[in-house]
Amino acid sequence: MTRLVPLLLLALALAAGPAAAQTVRIKDLVEFDGVRGNDLVGYGLVVGLNGTGDGLRNAPFTEEIMANILERLGVNVAGEQFRPKNVAAVLVTATLPPFARAGSQIDVSVSAIGDAKSLLGGTLVMTPLNAADGQIYAVAQGTVIAGGVTAAGDGASVTQGVPTSGSIPAGARVEREVDFDFAGLRTLRLALRTPDFTTAGRIEAAINAEAGGRVATMLDAGTVEIDIAAMRMRSAAHAIGRIENLPVEPERRARVVVDQRSGTIVMGADVRISRVAVAQGNLTLRIEEAPVAVQPNPFAPGETVVVPRTTASIDEEPGTRLAEIGSGASLSDVVAGLNALGVSPRDMIDILKSIKAAGALHAEFEVR
Image (tube, rainbow, N blue to C red; front, top):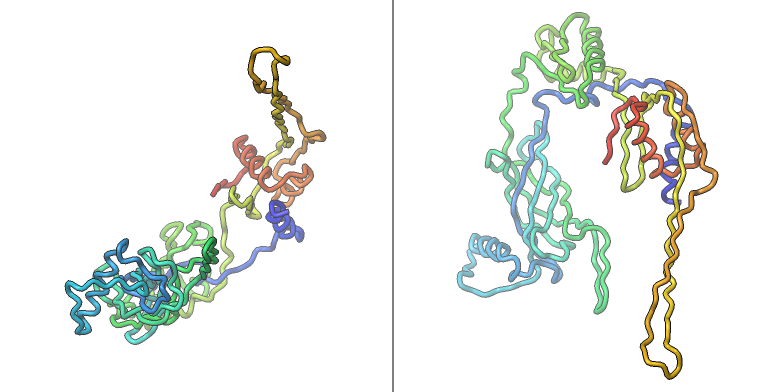
């Protein structure tokens, strides 16, 4: 049953036929030059765990950072032997959003790097977060919301989710702003998330039509440049606010994406197949072992031995059919033809591979 779920979902999606072309906002198709986030990372300590922290014998770095924190708080632990099991060393990661200002709060993710069993109920101690330039841009602290739970007894244990990682919503406060003179930009570049000449041309035409003149220029399949001065806008921010909600019909390349592990198949509506014949059948190999014990006659010398007896056979599944798919067949025609063979999603993946190898599948074929 589970193997047929992806095929069923695909058939339901195609029941209504090819979908009509839809428009998408420019802001959902491009990235604006300079409007980007920055990755942050820090190394900290989670305390308050219920005996599920690091074993300091296996994670000496936990003891080192704990000693450093205590010394900064005025507690001298040099030369002392302490091995608590309620602390865990963690890596803290976050993304500094564009135009984040000092004092604003961002979410952080916390992941154990030692042998801690769980971070459930722990509290992250004040942890500075650094960017790629080595500067501190935020400081994180707060109660960790773990992503799983573990329960164990004397003879068995069960784990649901990942208890060694979690998050802290609004757990970091921005301390430094990224220096970027966005208001001083005289030209603005739009970077398409999926480069395509047709889509870039349509974005250029939509912006020029909105501005009433030639203010946008397509540089290549992935870049459209806008002249802020020609738009007679006061700043790049005003220009983005004017054009980001313009509707554009995106164009995409025909593509087939398959996942062999789950048996999932996703095909775009532009997939076309030339005239091809497809036959699908299965071979069943059976090998049966029936060893026989052979004993000597009564009172005769000898030993009992086991003689192997093997029966091998190969059967072809009856009812194998040949289906023909016409030239220029659409996505719904392809699925209907393959469904006529009664194939499963995993068999359909093999068939699509063979059609692609035969040169009849006119689309990108991506296997994951």
